[in-house]
Amino acid sequence: MRHGWRGRGGWQQADVPDVDDAPAWLSGRLPDDWFVGEPEITIDREEILIVGELPQLTGDHADEAARSAAESGRISRFREDTRDHRIEIARQAEHRYRRKVAWGARIGGTKELFTTLSVPVMTRLRQPERQVLDTLVAAGVARSRSEALAWAVKLVGQHAEQWLTELREAMSTVDDLRAQGPDLA
Image (tube, rainbow, N blue to C red; front, top):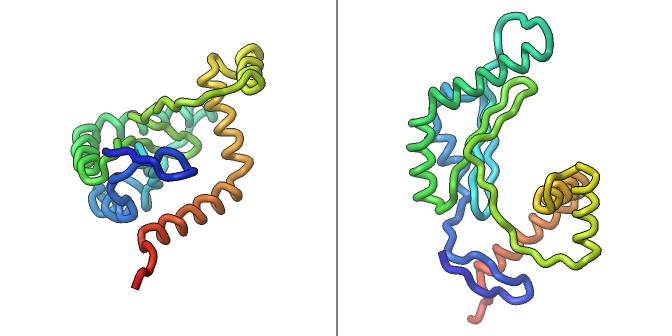
């Protein structure tokens, strides 16, 4: 992959394949009996995350803890039974889209992700921002500054989802205009 300067926005990845057809490609590639309905597919610059809903459990459980344990066990069985096939699908998708593929499963109230990336993000924080992170660490909310930063980003994402959605849509429009280029005729 090449990286290049793109004006005020800073460094951007270039020559990364388009992933618009990834959900459709994966939908066609995944076995029909793996998930109930279509899986949730989340894509960013580094990773494609596929999370599918497994069939509901049958039978009674003594309490919520027992149900949760059974759900976790079902997800574990799915992970083990499908490992070789998931690796092959991931290998093909990684070749096609030049992104890592991660998996997860959900059943009832239990959701587990496996093989997900943890990507380092370089940032420069001034003392007031570092103090915020250090306060979160000192209070036991996070074990480290990096975990505190991840927690803060997640919190902002939850509370600013509408604004982030509008921003993503605006960025998509800019990308479309950039791809069209100017009409010099």
